[in-house]
Amino acid sequence: MSQPAGLDRRSFLRNAGMTALVGAVGPGAATLTGATGAGSFLDTPNGKFDFDTPYNRVGTDSVKWDQQIRTYGLDRLDAGMGIADMDFRAAPAITKALVERLQHENWGYLDMPRSFAESIITWNKRRYGIDINPDSLVITTGVHPGLIAALRAFSPPGSKVLLTTPVYNGFYSDLTYTGTKPEESPMKVVNGRYAIDFEDFERRISHDTNTFILCNPQNPTGNCWSPEDLTRLGEICLRRRVVVLADEIHCDFVTKGNKYTPFCTLPNKDIVRNSLTFKAASKSFGLAAMKCAWFFSDNMDYVARVKAMNKADLTTLGMIASRAAYTGGEEWLNQCVDYIDGNHDFVESYVRANIPLLKVVKPQGTYLSWVDVSQVIERIGAKEMAAEASKASGKTVTPETIVERYLVKHARVQLNQGASYGNGGAGRMRMNIATSRKTLELALSNLASALRSPSRSSAI
Ligand SMILES: Cc1ncc(COP(=O)(O)O)c(C=O)c1O
Image (tube, rainbow, N blue to C red; front, side):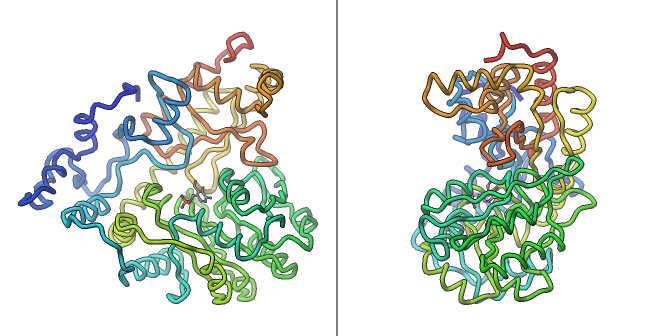
């Protein structure tokens, strides 16, 4: 999907199906049904949503595309495959609800409508069998602010927070905010799959380890933890008085044959009462910048403690979008999850057939592919280059930083560096595949060309 770096606002709006909408929100505007012309957001021929047509995000100040273009001074990026959001046009139910709300041109303080809490509770019950006590449901402006509030509640500055690594790099910034320290329990790789090392996990708990951030499904490895894994983790944490903070933001993306088990549905209620769960519609429906998430627990004492540290206001558009997702977006999501599953299959077979220097294993969940680039590191001399760059700049430059730069330069594809995901992330890159098959194909064919015979001289 090559595109000019600058934004042609008109063509962007047309591409986004928004010209009709903009016309529809002025005084005396036509009703929304007026916006259902060819190519509009409400089109779903045969009930099929369109994930296949590349959706141009360049020029919208997106981190995934525009930030990379700015950072690397590019005239063009063929595929932004870094930060975890999706390139798809939002579910029509969401856009429709937002457009309707835009027609009321007042943005004063918002009261939490009961219908929003109900939509969260109904969705979680129907889709995952979770019973949320309505009194325990607390809104946050994101999973990060929720986790930060929980860390403030349970983990004093200087104390340790358990992580099974490699794990989502954003957790490390939550720890920095709260002055806490990571205690990393590296996972083992068994037949290409990550597994928790339970002995190591328990050994790492000391008197000043009060919380464990569970990532389920795990970003970046894609593991969906089994009831047995979760129970074993839960038992250790309960016995050793470590509160489980279950981040389940990736729960909807599960590949065929796999299953997401919510921590709070484990049969042992004492284990469940020792946890809080953090969720949002943001990953599932591509609403990351809408800033709306929530947490809950069966333990009202835990809820009260975290709530006391959680200063969050609901944003109008975030609430409208999330509620519309839960009340009208399910079919869109089901099709999106299937599409992503197909993307994972495509990546696995393409890489196996065409890019011998890379290795991937289809993950159990998430829209992330955790790519083994150790042979690339070897071939381009990334370790030596990283050492030299670190010496020259006085900052830590990892071999994966070199690989990222190499791929941006030679393939016009941006991936995230594995080393930023903690212990066990070296030799890997994270590739976000939540994009159209065409963009994915372009990215993979660019990678194949760039990695056909990489040499040290052409490194970066
Ligand atoms: C595991 C995990 N938790 C939290 C977040 C971000 O959550 P929010 O944007 O709601 O703060 C991400 C985003 O990638 C994530 O992968």
